[in-house]
Length: 346
Image 1 (cartoon, rainbow, N blue to C red):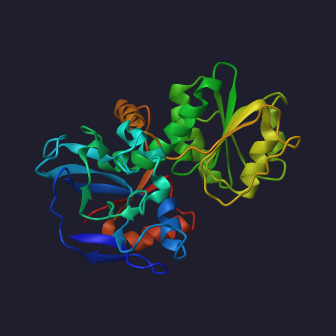
Image 2 (cartoon, rainbow, N blue to C red):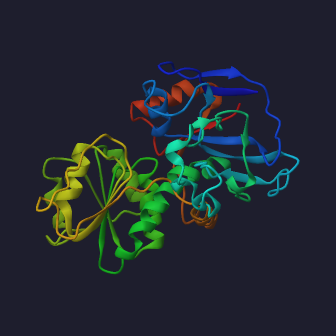
Image 3 (tube, rainbow, N blue to C red):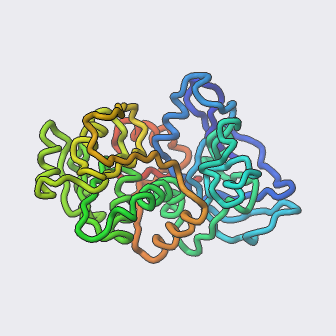
């Protein structure tokens, strides 16, 4: 079968032929219908040797949808032919959090040489992917694969981040989403259907603001030196109840800190390399709360899938044949992908 593999640090991934895996024990073989491409994949490809615990070679791709092709002799779960999406963060499988479907916060994460599918273990930018256990599979029914695949990270991470703020986002509240890309446009939709908050959006691209409005944002503005004043004016000067930062840059973090009201909450999801200095007393608002959400739980993935199947959440995608993965990576690096890039085996 063909697979897009990172063969060594410092090299670009290559599309190559590899042996079709045969599921053993509780493993499940899934025939891939679609695999999402995100900035995490670029970070992995660009990582210096030793920066990550992974050991090449391995197949990339942690956002994966397809159908069950074969079950290992001890596998219990979806039947052959059932369509599924992969729960991507694979933990140790033995700690209490993994047992509860919270592999994203596995207690042994720091001791593992992988973080999940396509992140140290063979992922789904291939014709097939071998899944260690059926507990990592969530049924998708008739949901199109190019819609389902991005839900396993872009949708799940956004949903998990919003869930952490939901207690704050009641009536007469305002939330800001910074960065309206693959995750941010889904966060806007999830906020719209799961909270009563007014939704503001900020990005550096006008086309991203158009996507924010299509996704349900009430107001959008470009990131400029006076953006904090513009955003605060939307709240009558009081400030925001919460900010979801999907950029994580110096500029976005400074904006977030500058627009939160006392008791406001900041969830930093983006990995843009920015820094936020926390000291008391300092420039942060009194009662400031910070979270660093990472992926989400298996139960939350099932909830995101349900939202998508109901029509409440729709992923804006651009499809690329697997054979043109290099083009898709290039477009993503240049910021030229609208929504989420999805690779489809050809």
